[in-house]
Amino acid sequence: MNRPVNILHGTDWWTDCDDVAALRLLCRAHRAGKINLCCVGIDSVMQYSAPSVSAFLQSEGVEAPIGVDFSAVRSGDKCRYQKLLASYPHTVQANIDCIPAYRLYRKTLAGIDGRAQITEVGFPQIIMQLMQSDPDEFSPLSGMELVKEKVEKIWLMAGRWDRSPGREYNLTAYPACSAAGHYICEHSPVPLVFLGYEAGMDVITGNTVPEDDLLKKAFNANGAANGRSSWDPMLVSAAITQDLAEAGYAAVYGRAHVDPATGDNTFTRGEGNHCYLVKTRSDAFYADSINKILSARISEK
Ligand SMILES: [Ca+2]
Image 1 (cartoon, rainbow, N blue to C red):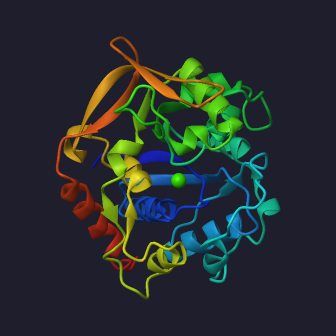
Image 2 (cartoon, rainbow, N blue to C red):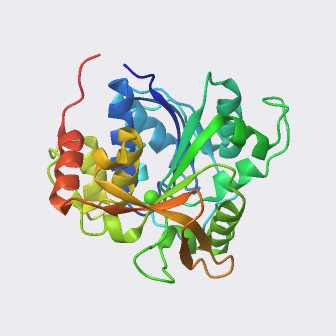
């Protein structure tokens, strides 16, 4: 059996619940030995951010350190499911008990044997902060050197690639997202794989999860009792599978661009180690395979 892929996972864990579905897929893949979920970075700060991720991981029987992007504080944000999740048992009691997410990524990358891949289903600032980071007690390498040495590729749920220019939330929510998206596209020393808005919009999942399941409760609290678009679960699903054809995608290669001011994304086909994913199967194919995992009771281990 192949060695499980090391994954550092970033999630905005904010106003949408598909982040929770994505984390379940990663936890189940971790428990099945397909991946090693090394850590989770939260790229939006709310009162219950870290405690709610901690509770969800605990409910999945997975231990992974949590980091927080403390620069991503927003005012007036609605806590739709985080408080509910945090009412379940958890070990991380507050955001301040975590180290900054980019530092956790440094620590994780420096400590792993072999290389890792990064999945990001929210805002791209943690990855930019990692790339821009200085040597520290975890590694004598700069962030860029560390990424070059230890990261194989970066998977991002971001952008809209069936239009030019395209606009999508993770790159346009606020100025820091656009700037970080631009930076990563211009400077990443490793391949970038994008799954865009257009791929996940019509794939509805979460609707088959039993009512007493914590994931379903998070969906219900988010107003998604009948399921939700599958942007984040599809991105992590592709990363877990590793084989794009098997996961149901063709890749369009070239170079992605993000306007640093507006967050609009464009793509130049041809030379380049960026790609965006195009579905090769029916929406039911992705929905069924994701729902099958989301709806399964946790296995004894
Ligand atoms: Ca998300």
